[in-house]
Image (cartoon, rainbow, N blue to C red):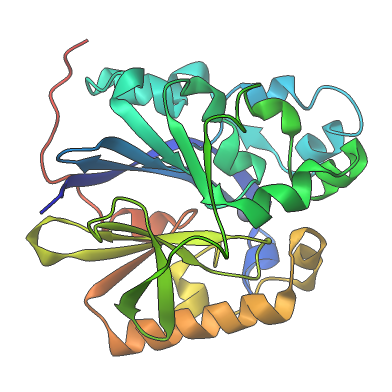
Length: 285
Ligand SMILES: [Zn+2]
């Protein structure tokens, strides 16, 4: 198996009232971890799926209009909670990270991107194009903070789109995706609705286990199991509520047809516990 290990780390978190992310939820503020998937490949190095928060989020939201983002989303992240810091503690150096795959450009997914200066960034080009040309207020409304990205972000990007070859993914109703590694072990799959170009990652892990990391296609596993949409207020940051619903329905169909596929939303504490690293890494720092 090309993928030798898959594990998750939590790089900071935010809080929101539960009812905003799931229909019928309480007014209680709930903690949403910003999860980073670490995928170790036998010949191509270490891949990250998203990067979580970093203290850079607070630096980039000191002034208006970006400050509005921090005011509406309380974010908690300490320097030792960044993905880079936690990887180092596990003996993984920055230059070991060959690729950083991005599900979309909300700050909780890209705030750590600039920490990985040796990596190739992989994502759907339409996702970046949709936010990069906006005014600073437009970007803030879209949940995108341009200052989080390094200056050479474009130069080191591998953008996927309509002109890139796709392959069948074998998890109907999802049809096809972009084979990142060329061996079918890590495949990017379009999950539209949350943002333009929002993507999930299908990973063939050791021992025949298939993981579908679905990023923000839903905030919790309960949402697709019980078909509960988020509050209409989330339409403010959403590309298409009807397309989001369709993706959620497709995830429900997939989970019914293929209970062997482990669906892991980025911010779901329950799903996080379904992934245990196959080989515990000893700290070498
Ligand atoms: Zn998002």
